[in-house]
Length: 400
Image (cartoon, rainbow, N blue to C red):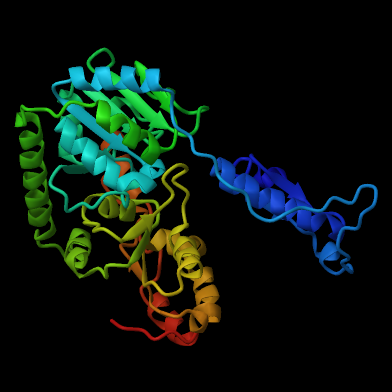
């Protein structure tokens, strides 16, 4: 069980008799939904062989029930007014959103308009708002954009919604901006920045309650500057993608794909340099979903995430970006999983794009920057002849 505790610490249990299973499984699902956290069940092979009987009305027999109604969570009126006072006083408001704001896209657009603000996105919140909106500055942090960096540097007020972004060096200087945060999790709110007002509540409900208390900014110069910076950033990204490289500039792959993405596509990326291009070069539109290992930066989740996307939405196309190092770790093994299940999916499209550069590229970059390393640590990491034959051998249709 200790193997899972660092990831599934909210609930991890081992089933020792079959009668435990309904209650333990139900509790695992409820914990995952309520706390928005991964949970784990361990069912030993010998227990799987035992005969099952449902819980009876007897001592130590515990049945469970189906479903629950989520509560509406909205802050008290005085907290909303204090937040509005801070935001109304600000002249240069910046917004930071994460995956916790996914149900509040419409409200966030309204807030940004009223406040004359730009919106930066934590990596796991990339699919919350369309990158085609002119005031969306894109990712923040090490894999972030210049407009996000400049907005955080120059703002005087920060409104954070549904994010626990931990890298404070990319947030406004302490004392340089007043802060308001909205989050449904009271254990995390206010833990990343010295906010003046912390509102515990559902992102959409709290934003709707806050909007009538806000005054529309008449001076739009801050917003106009942000939009100019965003337009210049996308022009720069397009030019970088056009830089010639042998055999190919990886940014070109991502830049050319963006306008061709299906409107209902699910995109996943592995950790490493593929996450860089995912964060900076892909322009998500409304309806496109995406994810990666945003908290732990785990190696190898790209293909498993893509498989999870297909099981959750078998009618949607999935595209996975994985480096050759990640493919070697567990991506190749998961191709067998895909070969086993793909015929069951309503839309069988699952594309795995392998960024094959014979290098642990992200590590090499860091070594070059911090230790002056000139050469790759891992030449010929992944034999060129290995990948092309695998899809055919496992029954995939391969296109090149």
